[in-house]
Length: 180
Image 1 (cartoon, rainbow, N blue to C red):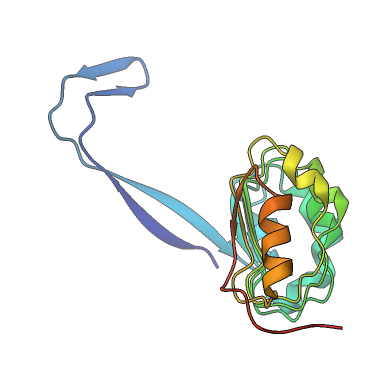
Image 2: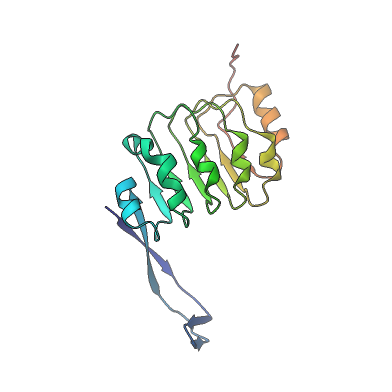
């Protein structure tokens, strides 16, 4: 079942509405609604409208067959679903801007993620990530990769920051730990 988020926009100087134009408005308030679909069933019923999809573990078995039908999907969230592998079906969603896979058990990000030329943000906080592909540096729109909550020692922490200079890499403080 979808639920709505309201967003507020104020202070426009020009607002175009179809063929009409209102100019020099000192303050204008517009409420726009964004629908977030929870679960595959709701997404399939409304496949032409789905921009933001939130999934739980029970939805994952339908992922490969359903995702290609969601051609306008911009944000996918699968948090706390105990995912051990990055769902590679996501790599074929060219319209994606954000991938939110926090609080899972993912250890590597596949190279196929670099096919997503519109991707701006990847959230992998509280996972087990130890590998990120070098091609992330070549993604022109990528702005943020969030690895908060993943333990890296001082050496790994420094290497990651040097290895990925083309976007903001969000890391927790380096730890005094060694992983063998």
